[in-house]
Amino acid sequence: MKITDVVLTPIAFRDPPLLNSAGVHEPWALRTIVEIHTDEGICGIGETYGDIGHLERLRTVAPALVGLDAYELGPMHQRVAAALRGQTGDDKHGLTGKISAPGTVDRVYSAFEVACLDIQGRAVGRPVVDLLGGAVRDAVPYSAYLFYKWAGHPGTEPDQWGEALDPVGVVSQARQLIDQYGFGSIKLKGGVFPPEQEVDAVRALRDAFPNTPLRLDPNAAWTPGTSLKVAEDLDGVLEYLEDPTPEIAGMAEVAAKAPMPLATNMCVVSFEHVAPSVAVNAVQVILSDHHYWGGLRRSAHLASICEAFDIGLSMHSNSHLGISLAAMTHLAAATPNLNYACDTHYPWNAADDVVVPGVLSFVDGSVAVPAGPGLGIELDRDVLGRLAENYRTCGLVQRDDTGYMRKFEPTYERKRPRW
Image (cartoon, rainbow, N blue to C red; front, side, top):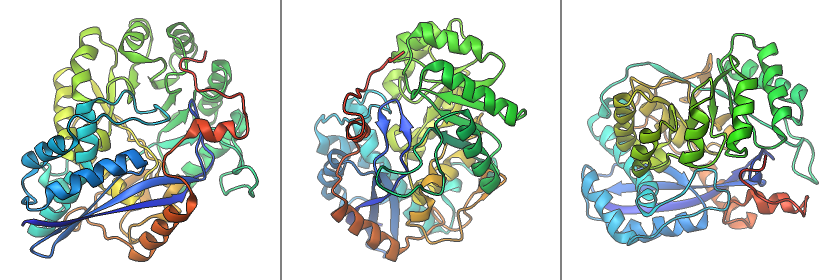
């Protein structure tokens, strides 16, 4: 099955004002939808980041893939690397760690790999999970992903989620998500307020949900000393503490004394980071993300490495739609040592999904593995066209949480660590 064309469609969809250590989400989230066509008439789809730099790298690589067989994933990775010629990606928020040249190759390659696996599955009439070794679970558990947030974007009406700026608001948000989706674990995005306030919010969650695993992620907003103080305060409360402080060295300092495991999607974000982290026991849980670990099969390699070094495994999420959710679900279903429920932003963005409804749904906090061939989903062309028009008219080409925050708090600065 030779690749005959690669179509890239940048899109924008509505995003709530979710707060984090970099600032606040803008009204529009950006993604790119990838479609790969073959000479046998089979088309596969993928989803990836939408920032202009990443989009331009996708556009640079796409012509080099034409003529490859859709099964030639090794040569495809090589062609991506050759086309990029050592480029290194970046972003304005820094929430996914330092991006190297090898990491940039993996981030660009990943969406093309997912689309090719979709093609392969469609061609043989099997779901992608079977191409990854088969399902070890029929449904994948996800976690309620809580955020401090404004009631709505400034100048607009409050959104359906409402305000969450204190423990009462955080608990209310958790109840809303759990009532609607049935989640069995909870993650709070921190790094927004002084640590003692966020500790109070976690304790409020523990009071409200006494048997529910809890996680806290301040996105490297704290010094090692502050991190250890929070870890001591929340001893016996947290399932794990995610990225409390910057860099491998800082995480190792905290991990040496913290009473709970440390997790990361910021200091170990590429294969080159694994050995240095293992050498100092910096993290005990890695949050994989096929969008920047090089797709589904390379993420499966990461899972094997984690198993070898007795490192826990979960899954990171960014603002995404149903193509990414389907890919995440196939991968998680095929990963025996996925020890923790996966993150997902999907509830925050589901109203604008580009996937035809009826396949992806949460039951008791889990998503059943799509049973159809390939990813088991189809593009909703009408929605895709609408979101593509949003991209053309919204005025955004790069996510900038800090810049958006400064529109309302001119003295705000992104600072890690802040406390």
